[in-house]
Image (cartoon, rainbow, N blue to C red; front, side):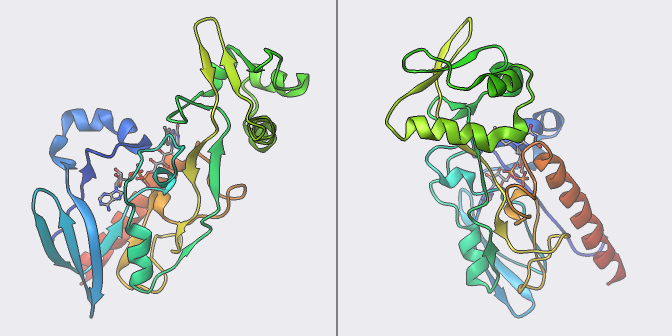
Amino acid sequence: MKGGAFGFIPIERTTGGYALLKKLLASNNQILTKTSLIDFQKVNDRFLISLQGEKEHVLSVKKLVLATGGYGGKFECTDNFRYSSYVIQDLVIKNGGNVKNKDSIFIHPFGYNKGKKILIGIESMAGEFLDSKDEFLFEERLRKMIKENNYHESFSEILERVNRITSKGEKIYFVDSKRKLEIKPTVHYTGGGIDADEFGRVYGIEGLFAIGECRADGSRNGGRLPGYAFTSAIVDGKNIASILARELYSA
Ligand SMILES: Cc1cc2nc3c(=O)[nH]c(=O)nc-3n(C[C@H](O)[C@H](O)[C@H](O)COP(=O)(O)OP(=O)(O)OC[C@H]3O[C@@H](n4cnc5c(N)ncnc54)[C@H](O)[C@@H]3O)c2cc1C
């Protein structure tokens, strides 16, 4: 094989993808690292990249693939890992690329534990959403949809109702047979990000790729919704592997 490639999965910042990859990691932990990409700069036809682990390393590479996830972790209320700094978008802009659709943010209405967790459908259907006077939060139509776990197309309506109540300073709760949780809508997924084509080729920076949730893809309604986000990150990964392998073997 000509050239060389490497990739890694940071172990300190876990998000949805990491959780889903746990099984794979059980049989192969060689792909884990504590190293972060802290800077990169395009110099002629190569990238000088700075990696911060126990020590700082500077490498020169021909291609750079960013698979750094969404920016949900920048928000205070999110079920993603909370980043103290999320530099990737700034680095792309510094090198002549673009970041778009930043307001394409998917807020899950049923966050709890200060937004660190979300109630999924089968959990929501097993209880009731109540206001501080113990009255049903939602009208019969929405309650029925939630009970049937068939409310995902009505997130905006549900969120609007939740926000209307909480913006007045009132609290809302989810109650089932075991628990009473204070509900706090939370940033679950971000649809904007690095401007790139469908194969992840970043516009304006030859040799740079952005795949998965870090790549801007449509809008909140017309683009990816959590449910196929993970799959789309995997498909992007497969596409990029084919593109780079083809380039490598034809060089
Ligand atoms: C709680 C939760 C549940 C979800 N459930 C589902 C689901 O059921 N189905 C579904 O399809 N989607 C789901 N999603 C969304 C899905 O998990 C993500 O869209 C998907 O994991 C994105 O994959 P990714 O590889 O692009 O990014 P990520 O999985 O976020 O991985 C990006 C990695 O890059 C690292 N990173 C960031 N910056 C740097 C840096 N500077 N240097 C080095 N590393 C860096 C991050 O720490 C992270 O480990 C869920 C998300 C969350 C938060």
